[in-house]
Image 1 (cartoon, rainbow, N blue to C red):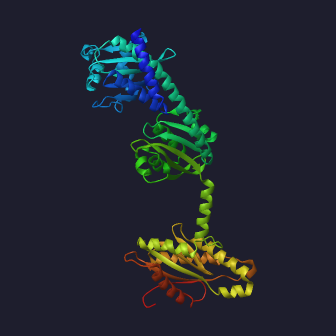
Image 2 (cartoon, helix red, strand yellow; image 1 turned 60 degrees about the vertical axis):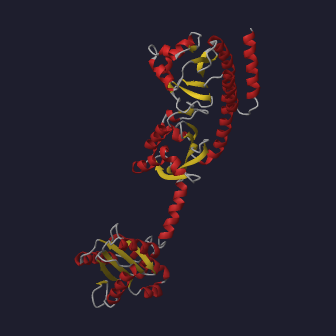
Image 3 (cartoon, helix red, strand yellow; image 1 turned 90 degrees about the horizontal axis):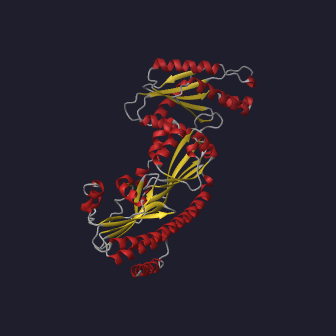
Length: 483
């Protein structure tokens, strides 16, 4: 009885000391620290089981001065390694090993594990809640004394530890629900959002639209605050189901969380754009949430937003910036830039300048609206005659240009001129009462050997145009020496 009272007094002192701290983690650490010092052991620890993984984790540890901590190494320990401990617990008994040499023959794996930790003797008691074992609480190398009495003491402590752990779980759940609730508000702009533990690869689906969940299948439906394992496999599966084939590899590289900490260094977020099979253009984003005590990235938000409308607006603006709105051809700025890039890459070809003959007369005689019809008709015939790889642009007014890569032979160029002239002759503007439209071409070859600028080729083609204008009807002149 005196021993029990003594234990109760020690436990009360430990409780008072623990309750000076605010969070459950701090309270548990202080609680076991107090007993470690009182008992005079090398190490006190708590292991909590995870039935799904069939593993047990060292979640709390106190070590005497000079004793090497083991908590980082003793994670996800296979429960089969110490199955005989659980068999003993299920009989209502605790583990008492007064000398680990006694178990060397019968339990060699346990012996080796304890020997590696410099354990000579150990007492371990189960953690029970509602008659179910959820882990254990142990003391390494306690002073040689009344081991049965120590077991009784640990059983009493174990009951309190279960209460602390339950309070901790409620505390974590409450904080997590509050945090997830705040993330849910943020998730309104996204079609999906995950909270990911980068270190454990566990994740929670904060949001996933019904449309996406139905497309992916029942395994992807979210549960209320449900934590799942293997984010890497989960997100790889999503990418393979949703992403178009040509962009799959790039998307998989983006969601690779093994390189995430390095890529997020100094960044508020990183993004990747891709096309999915449901929503069209999307943008995925990683946002860092917090870091551990060693400064390593711990949690991130992985979000996907639909940017289809944004892309349409962006593409429309790009189109307007690059396009001549009357004809739909490239405008001068974008056309020159494309030709310049080809010339920088020494892509030989033919530059053509095209000009409508007597266009001022058409405007003066039939009006500017008819002149616009002529420009639109010539542009359409020019587009029809050229290849998809050719750059076709409106320089301004009734002047056009085209650069045709790989057109390097005079005979091939002349056939192009004839096709273009034939198409131009087919233009019939009703208001012009059968009057034909004629064009002049000034052209210049670039062989692709030496560096050349657009301006130089333009000047040469312009000189050839000057000669072409002297001829009647549709005509073309290729720049030559002496011009």
